[in-house]
Image (cartoon, rainbow, N blue to C red):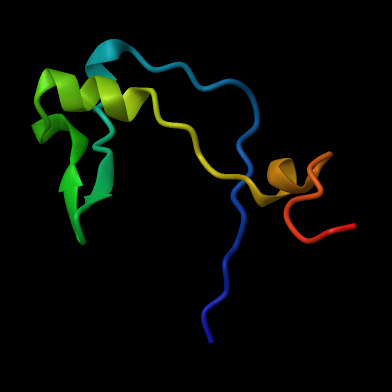
Length: 68
């Protein structure tokens, strides 16, 4: 059985720009996964404007259909 061991780092870690690497973001498009960096500018802009669904937010204050 595998176990996950949390790692605690004491103090702040500072990285120079030369030590950083970009994070590649992928998204699902029409049933397959694709990196966002390969999108054209218009599709990248649309991706940046997306909002993510949150069940907790949708339940708060909204009674929905069929609730009386």
